Image 1 (tube, each protein chain N blue to C red):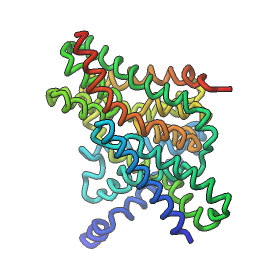
Image 2 (cartoon, each protein chain N blue to C red; image 1 turned 90 degrees about the vertical axis):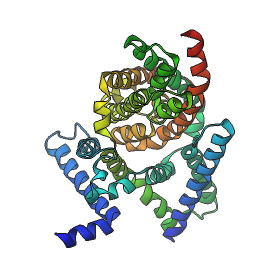
Image 3 (cartoon, chains in turn yellow, red; image 1 turned 90 degrees about the horizontal axis):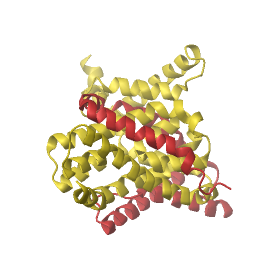
Image 4 (tube, rainbow over the protein chains, first blue to last red; image 1 turned 180 degrees about the vertical axis):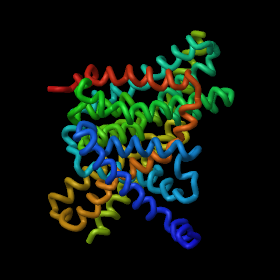
Length: 247
Length: 118
């Protein structure tokens, strides 16, 4: 056993390849035999991943030394690298055509999400501009929340709520996107560009579109990649000043 | 050569990140604004240009296509490394905010998608 553990510890990334391969293989069988391909295998694999993450801590399953290679395979470097690679299958003309809609979606996504978050926080008893802004920012993504919170001096428990809200959003988008896609006409590049801008969480958009239709991934990722940066720009400045003036 | 394709992909990735980070500095945001997006547009443009010159073919292209197919397993690994427990223990406000605010945006997709269509 000792030798096996040593080999795995030294070759974490390769062990992660094996693990993910097994999960995806089993998921495709479950998708075929149990769900008769009504739910895509990828969606089941992603859901399995989320479930496995509950056995770990802050970094999910990769907190357990045996599975630490997952952190590298699923980390932001390889995620962004592979997402960029999907651009090979994207059509530049379709993106140009959706450009304006994408920009509108980005702004609408941040404003609507922020004010929804603020409104919910307000009805649940938060009344100060700092807490409201931080929770509203957390509704955008789990990066915008803490960045905004620390910039305007929010308390650590409010920052924790903002991170949790952002992570819930990512998980929710991952699970719900393939289910709701047909009813919101998310089946073409144009809608995927809009979807990426409105939702914004790169991880959620990438995973949700992957489970819906992998061909749509580059279009959604393209706009989603601007969301977090734009959120970090708008939330602690314009949106915070606005709330401070109103509250 | 396969590595030419991988190297080109890495080049686009790094340039995109650089542009995104510079934009971040310019806007006063500590981080990367649209780095992946810039990298994607650069890769698409280079792909079109190199295709015309017939430089982008065979093994070089395979070097990029391999990584674009590795995208799904990376997403599965990413799901397994999320802080799911913290998300669930963030209390009801985190859950309500995360779900309701997002659901409204889902509903906006078909409305905003009308812009620029035909």
